[in-house]
Length: 255
Length: 243
Image (cartoon, rainbow over all chains, first blue to last red; front, side):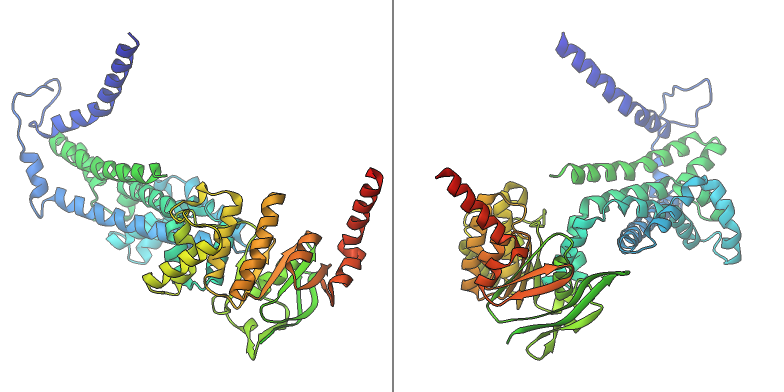
């Protein structure tokens, strides 16, 4: 009886996890359905084929989102790690740490409106570089605060030990800091990648419709009531985070 | 060939930590510095290792001004109270760390590490990770990691302070043996007068940032500021009571 209850619980859990993906996949292989006709007898891979077509809006958005999220994730992690390390030894540490909370007091949309004036002045609006920079205004403070807890007296002593053993700045990073902080670096990259990947407010305002990421594309298809393409782009949207989650789990579960 | 420390001073704000510290240290000798917490002994070691700047003074070796060199070029290795083993490396890799930084060949590293592990009684533990070692074993590995790079000067900042009495005594004996074998010049900082007495060839007392050097073991034993005469008197009294 107990076994049966456990099995049912696992089954229910599996159903809850797979149901949203199942629905998205179903909607992506059916023609554009309209309420109340949600059940289809015809299925087509046509919407998915758009992904493979070079030059299609969907494939371009996927490529752009990947480049954007990877760049933002890498830059935010690297800068956050380096700056939090430098600031740990600075006497301005507390005031600058407080400053890092600022972007999270405002919502990304308000923040984007505040930033937009400067981006327009600098000619950065509507460019991929501008969107990368705008997203860094959120992800860099996040990474900075994330790594704030990493630096402590023990890390400082170990770094000093590496120096006295003859290690230069590069070796300090490659032989000690990088392997010691590997788990934290991977987790931070994963989180900043996700922030960038799903970012909507800042991207739409700073990108002024010219930088069409996959997240923006999903919203556009939904506004156009193009359910199959919205479903395809949603399915693709959750894929990289799922892969990263698996990689991250492997890293985090490692002893 | 000796090390010369000349008039090193250091203050944190208005608070002086070291006042005109000077001494000479002959090669292959150990200077033990006894001092209470906050007396300035760790600050002195950090200045000699190049981890903190001095306000004034010089640190010389032969004709070289070591004080002007960056930490990594001084050949002065600092051994902390905690073993600080790299948790992602096993015993072999931890001992080999300094040689890898110096880009020695694999065969050279293997030979040197196995010899060092044998000298420190770590044979058979080379594959173990730091969390699988006892406190004494960890300190042996840290000791091996420092010695394998053949430092000009080894600085030991209460390295056995966290160990139990028995292991501490064992480590003191091992330190004396290996120091002799490897012809190490060292400065050993401790708050334990007995340890200062056992490990040092030369002895000194650090008090309020001033260093007092003793010319002989007898002088060190007689000085009440070390706490040793009081301790000897205590044990004599206990013995008399028991008899």
